[in-house]
Image 1 (tube, rainbow, N blue to C red):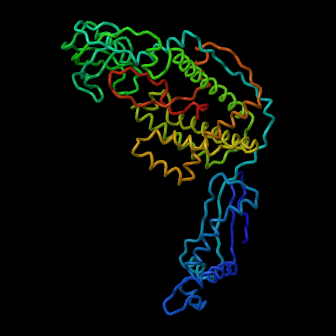
Image 2 (cartoon, rainbow, N blue to C red):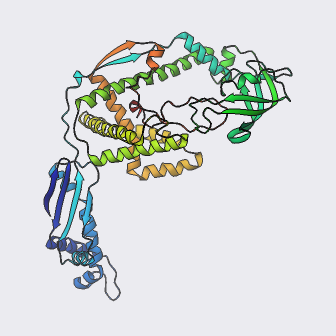
Image 3 (cartoon, one colour):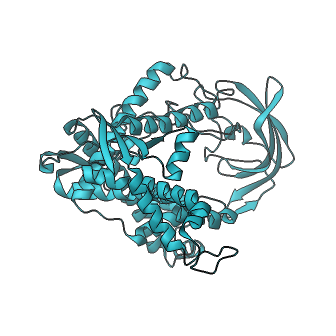
Length: 478
């Protein structure tokens, strides 16, 4: 096999590979010799088929197998050159049928070219130079009690009453929403249960249920928020024709062992313990995300190199497709987000380059630190991923992952990244800073990348409107 470099520019490489006809012939002879005792041809006893006849029958098909074997082994060429391709090399062969036939007949050298980009060498620096401040928040007893009450509300019982609905009552209603007298999609429901004061619906909706009783019909007038995600409803005045079917008052609720047992727990203390753990975990995730973002920013500043263009293109396409899907689902445009498509493309191109560079750096750090993702970790992550699908699809999805190495690689990637972050947290200088809840939950402009807009139903349920529809994700959560 003769390998000649024909292009070496930046990260781009191109090789011309020639396998002489005599070497192809030698490989073919090995296959024919191996097959002579195995094939059954009419008119010949096993093992007695003449070599020339065997060649006439199987020569071209065996030579095609030799060609595929050579192409499948191109990784050895790169290994010998000490290069890591960013993506699978592109292979180019002759498209001339006559030339291809000569190769399969053993009358010509087998020639092909390989085009690829290499992963640039990354020289790791001293991580002790990285310094971050990790924000930490201590959950208060008051927050635990407040959350316990919310959890306990799920076990609260209601008793049907004959009087008018008051704050805190549960009202069962049918409703039909209209704008300019026309019903709109997602604006109707039957037997919808509303607890007045829970703020589940658009501002002003629940308050207008106060004073109504079973059998009453009424019209509720509200205005959708200006930044409501469903653009065709944003800022619009709407009327909802209401029919009250039942009014119920809440029974008294005490946080005690009996209440905890209704929730499947042995005691109120155990309920508080679990709630505290959940809150600490939620705030701990925010703490970690912010710390991770600081680490990524520090690595981004420390490692400046050219990223393989093919990887950047692929990452950009992933981001851009998400952006356009989210905008379409929200019924919004780039103008609605106070930008232009050109400006958005430039911004996401920079984001794609950053992600690729940081991905390569984290991969190198993990490899040098011998970070491993265990089989049990992979299995847990796979099961968690499969649970997102309907039960009747889960076995099929499981088989898909098990048979698709790239799909499994996508499961492994975030696990590997988080373990690399754990490794870095043990290596860098970390200073913990106690902060308030508001400080921890605050999103700084330079810390948050634009969030994807979420598709919302045009029902009266109250939702948080997206600030920016462009689909940059928080990088620390990736």
